[in-house]
Picture (cartoon, rainbow, N blue to C red):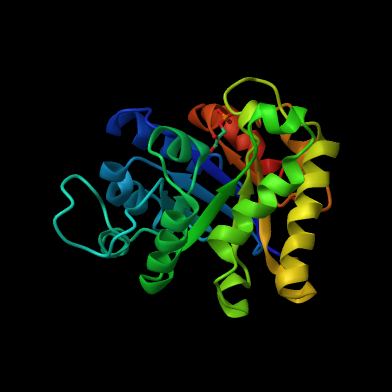
Length: 253
Ligand code: 13P
């Protein structure tokens, strides 16, 4: 079975004390994870070391950065490279979140570079894609997402994409309380898998974990995750509340 993942994206929230307390509360939920299940904490850069230290005894718990820079190293004041992230024990990196695409003008090419740097530095990318409301209303979401995949992932090898992680996050569902229906999520996830199968092959496509993101909560996670092509979630607001996120973890297949 491919990996089923409950990934928290704390975004720019919580102080260090609050983040460590939340991590502790989630760990003390003592959820028995199966081998194919993972929990990922996507935390602000300064908390990576502390959260990693907190989860180190627990199998199947990982820490993720929310971004990295698209250049290897050098005079880029304020930026954080994939190499730096690897050196502090980071496991995953969220790449191409819609908030970064929108507010920081990240384009397909920059995201492709970031993914390459993740691979060079033994970090696992969580590649985000998803359409804005106007595109959904025009019923052009399939082409839109296909372009995002093509432009940032199609240069990768079969080997790199085996076990890769994609998060489908329709922008109109992020932070709005409005989720895609489980049928809409399933439809897009199946489309993403088909796009990957057409470019690569079925084995590669079937190995990719496709997470859904956009107003995942304790009360809708089970239904969304039960869809055949939905392999867990990338969770914003509800990942900041221990009881909510614990229920979301327990909703994994
Ligand atoms: P919400 O769960 O707050 O809608 O955020 C989703 C998201 O952007 C996760 O990356």
